[in-house]
Amino acid sequence: MEVLMAALGYLRADLEKLHCHPTVTREITSPIATLSRQQRILAQAPHNNDEDKSLIRMTREARHWIEYGVFVFVIITAIATATAAWYTRKEWQSMTDNGRRQLRAYVFPDQANLVWQGTTKPTVAEIVIKNSGQTPAYRLSTAASLSVDDSPLQVDLRVPSMPDNHTVIPPSGSYTLSVAMDKPLMTDQLKAIQMGTQAIYVFGEIAYDDAFGECRVTRYRFFSRVRVLTTEAKSASPT
Image 1 (cartoon, rainbow, N blue to C red):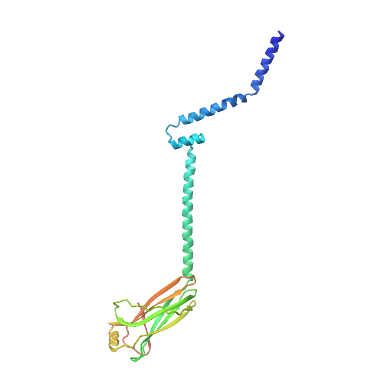
Image 2: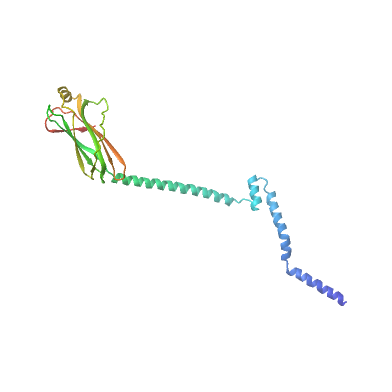
């Protein structure tokens, strides 16, 4: 009887130990439950493509719709950022160009006056070149010519080559250039000018560098159809 009671006591103690350590059972059954869950996911996704199935095999879970949303959001953000950077650069370039336009030199012939010296001396043109900009015009050189041709003009007038000498015109400064004809006006030329079939042309080019190192070229042409030529200066009109 005592032996039976002792056996029952040992059996009860074993049952209490088993009851107090249920994690052993969980550790044994947990991998089986995980494998069953993965098998169910693979079995329930026959409509997925091969890429989704490979992703399921690698990550052990299906792709969530939030992942697609994040991907689309990243793409849109990248496009918006690139567009904003492009507009910012264009705005910066526009501001830089506007600043240069406001500050750079602007050199044009302000006026051209004809000086009649009679039939024995060539006619002279005095050209006033002015800088209307806010910065100096550097390395300025100009080539000009004076001739008589048909009116209206039928051919292009050829500008002579630029000389090697240079000058600087400050802001709001001016520079006077004198150019004379190769020979005095002939009688038939004087009659044609007075009748209006011919005119005296003053034309040329102005080349200079602005404060930003840009080379600028101004081309101009004046003409005059005077009825009576005197020793006084006659103003020519721009064409």
